Length: 376
Length: 254
Image (cartoon, rainbow over all chains, first blue to last red; front, side):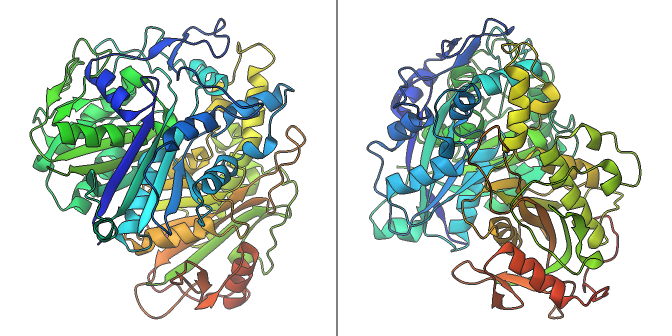
């Protein structure tokens, strides 16, 4: 199997317009979760989310496009024949809302093919691309698919673009499920009470080691393992025993040809809901035993960015491996019961070269990636 | 790459539901899909089915028919089978239905049940629960007009060893008058049960593989669209035929 490198990363989050800013503020333990100004939240019990400052649409176009412009501005040139894989759960959902309210909007943007076509054209790619939708595990699955494409030799290079917007459509839905924490999410905290939504994007350029070497590119790190499994238990709630996540992580470890003891840190899904965080803790303990591996969630800082979450977490995970530091879990104060892992409101040192990044989503899907740093 | 056997086919189109071994014709076209009832799909009462919106019912029904056609509907323990489907419009029809519950009351009475179906993958979760499937599940939004993206990705998953059996297909519904101008060229749901071929004796509806360029091939012949693929499969299996799938028992837990 070909070695799969990640050679360039970019992020846009509520904490900042680039990865350096987001990283600096993550390490400082800051949060971008704050009162929403994009739509009226007066009728909802919660009113906070992480949103991107200064997004402006052109005419009646979706706010997704300025996020994509920010991501791609100054991004590395793409190799010839580069393939495109995107991840979004709701795409141009703001355009959908406008049209349903009787306002003007480009209807062609509403299906996911809208932003996909825009991206392929903007990047000058021959490949029209494909969007992966796996609920909150969308971008983790997109990275896994890109890795499999490169690993198997089906592609030499793949650009993965992950994106989702904060919208009333999604906010109202999570509110109706009573899944939003009015105080802001507190992943893995004893008093956690729900998630905070966010918006953002990530771009990850992946290529085979051979292609990278031919271009004199060293790479930031590599994707050495991936796995996915459905827990086949409930559509909106995780399996209490973590059976799907356990399978996904074990498959990723097997693909990476390493052992559980080689995992030095975990970037968890960590939404801050009672059941998700408990399920993750159970699953990780089943795989890793009681070893107190450093574990974090960045959703207390940037909110749950849905289809963008896994991509942003990969970019942050690679930076974690490079700096040998796991960012704080914003919102965390008191450890939840029965969690053997090391969660902290402060940065934690990483003592090894492999990081596990996981996401789980509606429909019972669980996905896991294993990232390997590229030591200087 | 190694080929994969088509062990079963099921669908819901504008002409209603069907499955390969009971129907000798297939046509997926544009246009509305008639309602799918629980009685159309499951002989026994099914509490979950009645709560699902139309998009999810179409998808779940097509999967049920495909598994039934392959003799794999019944199960005792969960099995590592994956599901992948391509789509152009996803669950836009469900999005419209849900957002109608948000608009009238200014966000006061949105339906949690409908919201949980506003991801195009949610019916895959329903199918996983109903049939005990624990492989990877994903929806691929693919602008290609051939509607073969799901089958292509299913074949890739099998060749990469992600699992040994994949349900792969396509699903689309017209958005209707609420958002005019969005009309997928093919409407309905179709799934195939694909299994890694373990010997040279092709069974079921024949063998699929991918060319170097990524074209879907049926028994070595390149296929240009979903309708052509299904017709080629049906032509391979004699009417009412029992061409065996070499490695596939009629019903089995994994």
